[in-house]
Length: 245
Image (cartoon, rainbow, N blue to C red; front, top):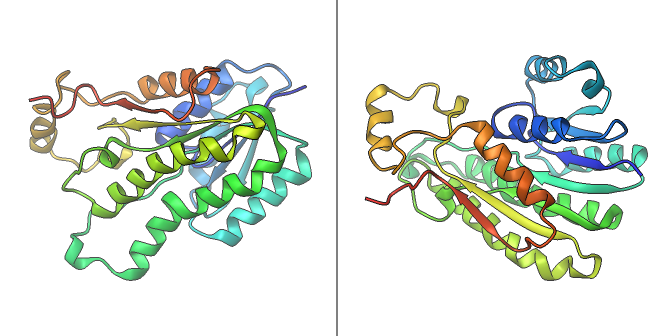
């Protein structure tokens, strides 16, 4: 039976790294559903960057994962096409660098929906078709372990994701579905494209390895967590030794 994997937000950044790691280790009949939000050009670039063999395994689906209705359309498409799901990676996430005093309720709600509420219901909707012994991975953040000054709402949602990870273990125990999360620190993604050299230097002084992490390093760890048959309820940090000074 082919392995069916779903990853949300899988066409850029850490999500793309994880998707490509899975493809690299996939069998010829495996299927990978990849959701993306609004950047069709980026999604197409991701698809065409893969080998011809791996392109055949990919199912690109557009879905705004801040919307419950859009998520349900995504789930319906998966259920129409796939009889089962083996791995689910809840990766999509958004943030804001706005100051707390400038938050609007709508902005707060959209971030909470995207990072927390919609992923909760995505698991709920896919649970009936997930295979026994399946694996769920959440992309959390070290910002959910250690408060950062840059985004209060992001840290709050990621802290909730870490607690959700542990809470779902009991819910999914009857089907022996494992639930884990990764908690990256500062990783070199497009989120940091406007960061100044001074900002990099200030942050690197707080990291024992004195550099930002690479996407491939996070993807390698995520893949190992997904396939490890005895990891369950774990939140795994990967931050290079952040704030050890």
